[in-house]
Length: 142
Image (cartoon, rainbow, N blue to C red; front, side, top):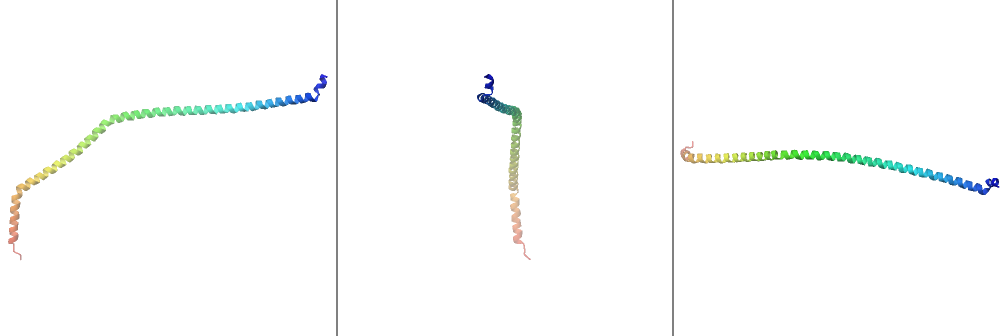
């Protein structure tokens, strides 16, 4: 009877069902392997992205440190230059003020000299003008 059972339709159906389940199981294994492969590829991609981001952050940190150093040196040099700039500005201002003061004093002195000269020469100028008027009045028109 065991020999006849191998040829039974029910046994063959069960064999086909078992083979179908094996094929389905293999299909599921292939699908799972595909999903694992995709996930591994995504993980590798994510790791590469994280590595790139980390590299960029390190690069930005270095650039930021360089910028801080440059700013510190610039600020230090500016701190050193501020007194000389202030001194130069004050010297320039003082030179301009001195120039205007000298020009103003020279103008005042010139005006005073003119007034003094006119004060001393006024009687001579008045006499000369009187003499000129008398000559003009006495002149004959021909």
